[in-house]
Image (cartoon, rainbow, N blue to C red):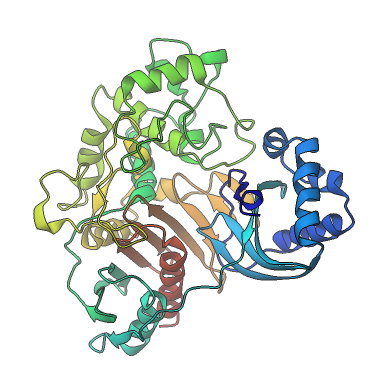
Length: 465
């Protein structure tokens, strides 16, 4: 049975954050009906083209019929959660077993991810966690405690809340099953993919300076033709509509502790010249791409005959006085909070070369609060440009340059991004109209569900005031 449930199709980014989508409900209902009726071809027809290629019809029939023999029909199902904004998990009761059916949909509501495994009930903490955040406002303390009480010991959260022209900081750390307050707004964390917002801000700055145009092709900055004469423009890299895959196929992922370190100039040029291929038609679908954001940053550096890191320092860090934001984890001393994996073990920091623009920044909540506050000034035209919608994903989400634009529960526009690396998880949301923001940095990997929930929970709380 274990072998059967080890089957996994790559999960792509979904676009839902606040509530269960009607599209997912329809998809899982149709899956149940077709599965129970042994209409496996209908399930195959609901797959995306990429999914059909990865799991041809005969393989689909073989997999599902084998599943049916082992566990029988689906009797009932219960939505559990969205996992890191990528797929929906359903606790599914079959005739002979209870399994977790995880399903992912693309922007056309086609299944592009299916993962079935034995269902495990959430682990309960062995000891009751104590809330020692009594020096924080009661509502804030309760929201923080509710989301982080089950974290491992030594997990830290650094939180900034911007409201009414003032920034308040709330640090929390779990020590001996107690959530304690800690002053850590000046401590440094990896911010992961929130870096993409900064990469787009550099792009917007160069656009405002009339150095480049969003519609310019990046091809002009390379002394060779891209494979297939594929043309890529700047805006499509910033809003994930380039058609590029999530990662380049020549990225060596065997080094799980530092996967981007060795991907340099040689590798990106080899990819563009000989391996480049698009997964989607450009400008038709927004499909999240770390490769695209990294390529954007690297090309921006080439366009100005410098490194992207130098551009970032000059255009953003220096301008907004972000004095504790860095492009390398080296020589940061005790100010750097060590990242932890899901077992609570300290892990190495990630290093980036040409794909730095996809996730390489290290920063503090104090610095990110300065960046958030800068969003509210009409003088900062480049930041305003990043927030303008450039592509509509669905009724609930648009994307600007880097930022994802969502509708909050009270109908307000929120601009949001999160991040995750080998030892860190983060989330940042701003409401430019009300001039509010929540920033959360943590030193624990793979807790983006909880960090995003906390971020939006705090945004809801401050929107009431």
